[in-house]
Structure formats: structure tokens, C-alpha cells
Length: 247
Image: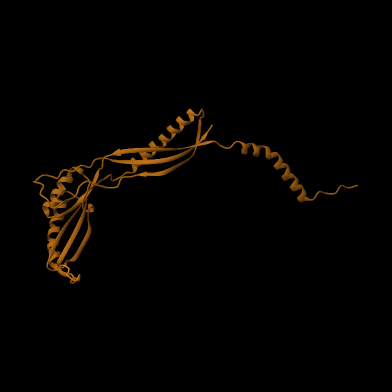
């Protein structure tokens, strides 16, 4: 008697079932032994001195008319720009940061009934502000002196900062990874385990210092001497998280 052929779907099902039976022990073994890991954080920091400074200096003038206030301001600012260029500041490092002409109002006292007259325009005020980048910190005091001597009557401060922080940030990152590995080694040795391969590395941010204002000054007499300033130091930090396999 001739044997009946087994349907193709049944053969595929049987083969699949057999493969699953063979793979089941390995899958079960893998499920029983999950990968052991340690998650650790590290921090790195680099301290450096600022190499650049910025100065914001302005001229404020008043007049009975807007034109009068603006003309006086333009004359004084021309002298300020000349002084900046004479101090050796490059054209690309000089920028007008604010300019305005606005009315000046007078306010009458309140009457006994609480009412008050409408403010009246008594004149106009012109304001022109220039931002100057100083790349030689030994010139900061001299530039301040030149600005005030030339007629700048509102110096908003000196901001010190590090112009290019990339190399310093990379150094802090390297230190952060080394710190994380050091901590992980210490902990695993104390627990009687060994470190394996690094699975993931993630950066948690860090801190790059913003320009720090060191002083504020208005029109003043420096007695013929350059104003004393100090840039101090700034710290750049980096933070990382490592996930490391345990052997």
C-alpha cells in the first residue's frame, strides 16, 4: 500500500517545533543569566585663566532738541572711537551695541485731590554704546583709561572670559571618564568583582563659564594711571555616566 504524503504545512510546523525544542535550553540559560553591570558617574574639571576681555562703554548726552542731543553725542563718540583705535583694538573687535534717542520728561507733583498733570518733554537724551573686545589683557586698564579720558561717561563693566574653551572642555571630559573608571574599579574590587567592557558612555553636560563682570565704573578720574583690574580664574567641568559590564 502506498504511503500518503505529509502536507507541506505540517512538515514546516514540525521542523519549527523541533528547532524551538533545541533552542529552548539555550534561551532558558540566557534568561537565567542576565548581564551584570555597574552604572557609575565621573566628573572632571579644568581651571584656567581668562585670555579675553570685553568692555561696554557709552556716551550719554542731553539737549533741548533731539538734534542737539544727537550732535553732542556724535562729537563725543567720535573721540571715543579714535581712542579705541589708538589703543590697538582691531576693527572687527569694535561693535556698536546700543543706540537710542529718547525724550526727557518732567513730572509735576500731585495735587491735593490726587490728580497730576501730564508729563512734559523738557529735552532729549541720546545714548550710544560700543562693545570692545580686548585680546591682550595687559591693555585692559589702559583701554579703560583711554575710554573715560576720551569722553565715555558710562562704562558698564569689564567681562573676562576664555575665548576658545574646546581644548579645555575635552580635557575635562577625559578626566571625567578616568574618574568614572577609577570609581568603578574601587567599588568592584571592594565587592570582589571584576570590570568588563564599557557598554555605554553618556555625557551629562557640564559647565562652561560665561563672561564674568569684574567691575562697573562711570566717568571717573583715574589720576593718570591705568585702572587696576584682575581676571582671576575660571573652571570648566564635564560629567559623564558609564555603564560597564561585570565579569
